[in-house]
Length: 441
Image (cartoon, rainbow, N blue to C red; front, side, top):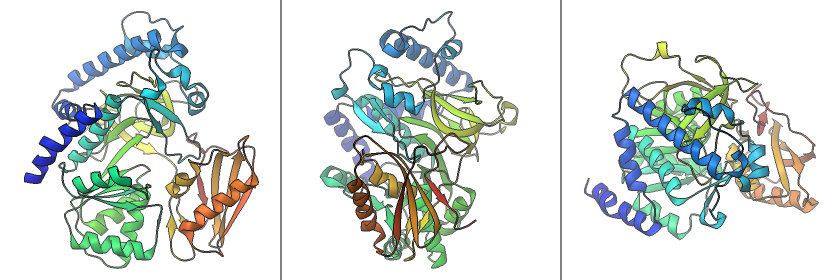
């Protein structure tokens, strides 16, 4: 507890001072919102939406011709077109508010788990707000700042600043790019020896660790597991609960700055309505009734540098009908019933390594010569990478990709073949499916 107070009262305020941000202030703000009534939360969302839309039509070139009539922001927003990843990539500069220098903003890119990467921009305070929400979600699991965290991620080179942060916040960082049996053994040995970790990371990578722990009969008892980044399938959750003897909390967002919903005391997820306005739309961009599946379209209510209005992120989901809300629930935020999506398949190798989707996006995000890609596995002998080339493409690009992948695969006999294509078909969710595996079919 003494160390937690040291982090809370000294390190975090110092970080805000040096970074000119307001993380601590926003974290306190979100804690207070948990206590509010349904009516008050709706009122805050309406005011935030109204303020954002007024700012957008006055300051963003793309929306300058929109005329806001009346006083109802929930009617105003229907005047705005649905924003797609393609539109953002083609018009990013005209989506930034006037009198703001691009150099003053922080670039955030989607994980590229669809094989197509999209970048947006925000200032330090907007960044601090999403970090505060994420920390607050972790607090819903019982976490307190300064507690031990085991976190999977895709940054093998942590660098000096990240290494210092890991040390201060007691973070055991696990590179989930590829997980060998030896690496999994080291991870499970550490988790078993020190049982007071919170385990956080991509659902698919957490499941790989859980499967290894179960097969090898480890006795690991964690404080909680927090899933983020990709879909938490039912069998993942079962494995995690069994392997780590704790509750699993699933979160839902996207790396373009949206923290949409998270679990707390229910099987459903609380929608962060003061932060996002969530619409579920049909193929013609019309609202579907609660309880029916549709496309996820979100508006971030606290991003003024580059307002993202009605952003179609490529997922399918279902809002919980109001008449099905549990009588007893801890918070009064609206509820998301289900996130519908494809299973993020795992590439299996002959040497028993497993590659998750981010193993590939961690490489391809730095390769501008490839516009889009898809990985296909039909057997353990190799994979086929379909790709759409960019204008600056050369054959040496493919050699570079093979060399980068083999650093992790370390299996020379494992074939990596390529097929140039002009189109990669979307899945039913509207997203290109980055990994297709027929091994379990």
